[in-house]
Length: 638
Image 1 (cartoon, rainbow, N blue to C red):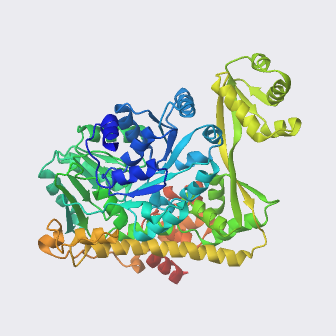
Image 2: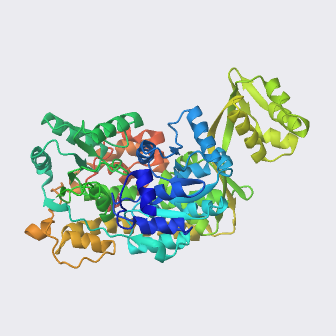
Image 3: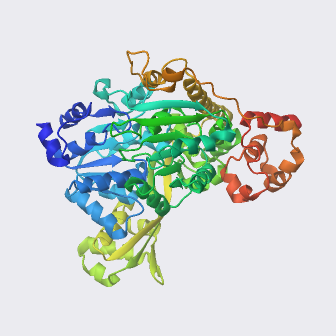
């Protein structure tokens, strides 16, 4: 019986809703998906089958903190699980890979980017993989709230490495997103197990609050029970610091958390919150995914969340113990423009798209090699939208992903070079001699001239990498890699530049409009003229029979009316020359209305980094104004 295995490995007596159904499908060697709300036990759907199937389950996870928490839990249950990430020492990294290949671990957690790693791929081919598990699987869908272009390659990786089945996990999938996941992974809709999103123990409160009164309202709310575990969500890193300091000044045990902190700081704050020595976290959305703390009593949105999906995910972190929890939004319209400006910042300028397409069209030959960061700076497109554009061009049939390799291999000798060569004989010895003959030592580190080895010995790159990995595994050398290079086949250069540029630009504009619409859809949801809990469940396709839940602010006191943004002075009252003079002088011929608008609205672009634009006076001076309003003002003056 599955319940016996559940008790044996995890100490649980029964399954939560939906878990057994998903697990049985996986054990029957079918691909499946678990669409469960946050905290409803999605992880068990791969953890138990991983113990019962032969081989190692490869789990793709989007966050380092999520991996660490899961591994710590599994190891506490004596379940052999490990992760691969940049925090591991060289010995830990190699031990993990060897254990995965030898069948000594059952679960290996990685990031999606790891699949591109030339060294990892070499080892992956030698693993017996039981299944591919994709957490936050909604990231594969452009219709989802957190689209990640790298996720689109996961179905290709599944085929490339002959992985027989897939398990998709997510807490936030509308019917449109489910259709997308089903199509991309070839999973029958019958194998999507959706348990529902309605939770009786969460009180959903929408509190219209003037911006100037939000801090006092927050303090009043937390002060009623200052030790109750609480997460306060904000939009900006600066707000996280300021609000945390305000709470501390008023004797609330709080600390901020955001992506700008280093990993050691973030981990320390998270651990304090998990153990209860810290009662309140003031955080951007960087905090929370995978946080398995059952007794969170309050989720307060100090600023509006980014979408209904984000809201659902974030409130789902409270009350996992089944006890009542408060989920409150201190709502006004003041930061809507900031949320929108983040979206505008991810839309590349048309001339940047043209520049990228021009590089492909004029490329010498049909192999296109890129270093993502360098290309981002060169064409002035942020990394994430650049990845998205490259995916769009693949879908258009202009390019096709080929491989990713490391440009630089270097190592330190732990064993004398002659000793290494002497361990081989015949043709293998000749090959190792050819490798060593094209390695150049400078003081400590030895660089490998792979191109020269390929030319002089007539072998394949894969064999050279395999040899270096073998030397490293044996401890004869300590291998390092640098400079990831993505390689694409150019399928055609016979495309019309202006036409394709226009089409790609239209895709980004459409995406931009969808994301802007998502924000306004969320505000409309908060001003709902019916039960909020019922509306939230309905958004994700779940029908609730009762008209009034009794545990939301609408059922208690009726519709919330969110106040309009605080009065901002007219743009015409600003000194245009004073605001823009230094920026215009600095950027020179790179100036466009869009780049100037991004400067005034505080939106980062790669070109700004090189020119140190953030240090100029008036960067972000108009961050609370609508992007298009600022742009129209600029165009009117020019």
